[in-house]
Image (cartoon, rainbow, N blue to C red; front, side, top):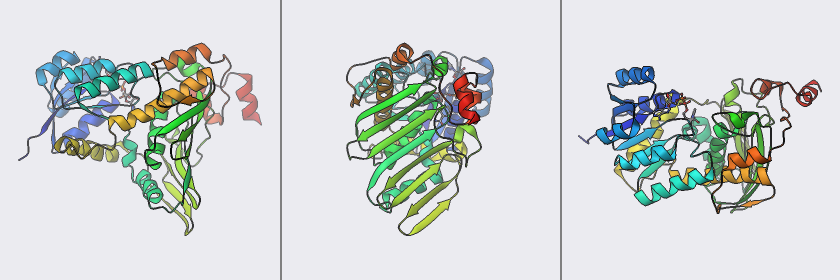
Amino acid sequence: MTAKYRVVVVGMGKRGMHHAQAFHANGRFEVAGVCDIDPARLDAAAAKFGAAKGIKALQFALEVRPDVFCFCTLPRLRSEMIRVAIESGARLVAFEKPIALNSREGMEIRKLLTESGVKAVVSHQHRYGEHYRRVKEIIASGALGRVHTVYGTASGWMMHMMSHLIDYIRWYNGEAAAQWVMAQAAGRGKLSDLHPSPDYIAGFIQFANSVRGIVECGAGAPDVPEVDYWWRKCRIGAQGTDGFAEVLTGGGWRAVTKTGASAGGGCMNYDLDMPPYVQEIADWLDDDGKVHSCNFESAYAGFEIMMALCRSAATGGQVALPLTGAEDEVELLRVHLAERRALLSTPVNAKEYGAESEEPKLLVAR
Ligand SMILES: NC(=O)c1ccc[n+]([C@@H]2O[C@H](COP(=O)([O-])OP(=O)(O)OC[C@H]3O[C@@H](n4cnc5c(N)ncnc54)[C@H](O)[C@@H]3O)[C@@H](O)[C@H]2O)c1
């Protein structure tokens, strides 16, 4: 019998529990340890998975010596945990999006991973949704003709949603490199959130294969009226010379091609998306040639695009990729974003982005 890969999971909140559950359910892994600074969460997780428990990630990881170090902490904790993963001797680190809150930390993480040779994956697990995959299949089949545009919109704010959108449009566009971006942003409300973001950001991406990317997140992003659940109001797709195909995170897929219109179901579901994500971790550990679909380098390319969009929104004009020089993009936005509120695209967004100003009310009343 093949030995099981031993996993430590740090941060036993929503996503830590999802990860631990998926590792636990997969015969190739053993959840050897769980770690959280919250004693109640820690005890519950340790009991559920029959795992050792620890409060201090470094000390605990050095004791357990896992093959896989997984952390699902909030975005302000990233490079510190990557260091712990490397020090612990883990062969692979699995962590949550966004990679970091600014390019300075993102570049540092990339350097640490490159120099250590530790494999890394970032959780853009929507890729495994049946509706997401159906759209990918249609695009890859050539049924859209020559793809010229890929697009993604989400009602949720940037640090939550944009790394997902960019990851999936990059996937739909064959992971082509980006050459430059240009963006605008509005609204300072979510700059003080734990996922700090402008309330609204919209931008263009020029890909090296001449495909145009268009992304929008937040208060002014178009509603997805087909989907009720607010966090799943995401529309991601591709247009080509012969048609289009798109997925709605909470509402299936649809396509129009030369042969006619088609549609199908599917809804984002952690219980369905996490098992194949975790299985690919085993496959990559078993075989260096079986690189994980959500590998760090791919996610980093998307992260870099997001940071470039922030730079453009903060200081104007086009921003060339790959990025040169480290910045704190959230700080740039804090310095440069106007005090004006973001205008809403739909009254439904008022709950998150506020409805107090004159401008959104006027817009809604029309
Ligand atoms: N991929 C997805 O679909 C998806 C969905 C939701 C959230 N996320 C991302 O997952 C990450 C975590 O989100 P969440 O909703 O699970 O957060 P959460 O707040 O539910 O969980 C975070 C946990 O980390 C613990 N923690 C904080 N500091 C710690 C430390 N130093 N050592 C150990 N534990 C520590 C907290 O006590 C908490 O239990 C975020 O980056 C978020 O953007 C991804």
